[in-house]
Length: 371
Ligand code: HSE
Image 1 (cartoon, helix red, strand yellow):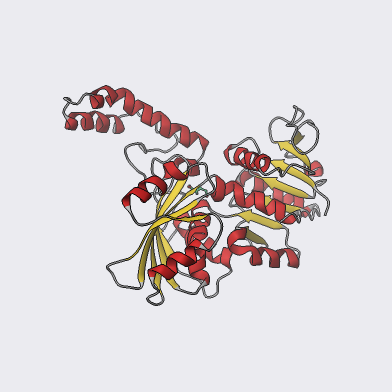
Image 2 (cartoon, protein in one colour):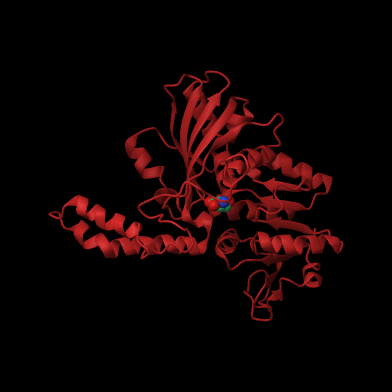
């Protein structure tokens, strides 16, 4: 197929990771790429995928319509504004989007090709044109445990999440670091003094967390030295929307019928860019742990099974260890004391890579017929 590709939102956090990954994989070779901007049309664009050309106006539907494929990390508001106009104009190109706006539309496919390549292929064969990256938490969970679901071993899953600041946005990430710095300024010297009473160190920190001095404009609460058990907006049933997405998106990604029940609590913690999840998996029968580990290990090239040992866990099953890599670490695998058909696991993945940019990057290559 022809390869006029337009990229929108390439300077933001997810977009920057997308561009880094495309460069690392030489995706720009042989591509004719036009870079769009909502605010800086006319300024010089990057020399990637052809010679550097001026940035085009991301709000100009006529220019967007010239593209065969549009890839956007610009966010949901942009999608809601531009996608209907493009489709109404008769544009039949591929729309590949990191934002959630179109995810649950009947015409959209949620892309996570190591997990749902057949679902993607069926959509392409039908002539569908909207391909949307999934919620980060859902994608990272499925990459870790999709084989157990495919084996028809799973009755239900609960996921207790430990989600990084990056999932909330770039400004929130900086706010977390700012909060950490403020804590250091307030209590760092005392904490470094072995003679200083620890409860007074704690009091300095707690006083700061409860004071108006702490930077909380973006999170609305302390995250450093604390956590926030609420992500996204409220649903009518008491879930948050992040919690609702677990079942809704996972079932759509895998095209499961009947649906697999998935629910849990989604919590923001002070990690930078890795989402972690503690899973409880109710098995349909007593599957031996060795069979489960083997199935997970072979499920895709990115999954890393970490032995359920302290040293291996500290070395490999933390946001600090996984951050910036495409690894999907899964460990703490064991049968629970609740019974032999209750499995627990802990998984960590980079929210900006497999959680956002990578499925989008790979979908572009699928549409281009490169993989
Ligand atoms: N909603 C996610 C979060 C990020 O807040 O962590 C993107 O899917």
